[in-house]
Image (cartoon, rainbow, N blue to C red; front, top):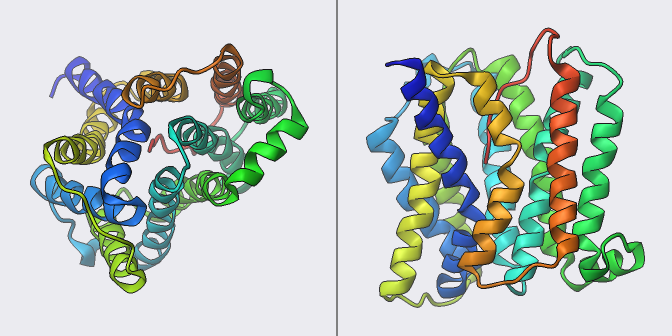
Length: 302
């Protein structure tokens, strides 16, 4: 496959994943947080079986099978449930923004644990991303720490899951680089996520599902964004311009917020966009701090 075509396919993954926050929230409003997530990952697993295929598990390093499965499943649960349990559209978008701290955390983890070279610009990059989240969560006033804490106290579960998820995904990326041996277990991991969610759904009696044309369309779009997003990203990473794809992925927070605001019909104040821009800028600064150094960072988005 030509490199430019593969890169273009990889870039579609950026747009697909940017829609996930709004689509997951739309699905959860009809099917519930747990039930909606279970349906999304079930349909996405089926799509991945047809596009990526089921991996040859015997060829996988055992340590990667264990740690990769554990971390991937834990992250996807944090992502889907943090958005699903949000109280409203605005909160879902804020929670999604907290999740997008993962690019910064991934680079910092690569420096601390995988021997990735960097310069001191990584420090202001990290601080800028954290400050950006504080601005996002401060509400209409922007950087307002008391207001941010009050905001988090309204729904600590969603914000907490999103923050923990960002840390988990950074750990997953580090583990993948060290243990995967070039293997791609995404189809297996998605099936495991779906199984765990269905177990949780039936064990907790998570409520009834409201089927209809609108909810089913949202479900199909969300599952497609998940499944086809991973398939497109794999093509881009394997055959396209990895540097361009990695750079584009750092703009996902802004794309995601814009699409979610449209899908959820939720206007966002100027302070939110300033904070989102700071998160993106901090991630890019961290990335630039590692440019020209021995790379141990595995590009990946979710």
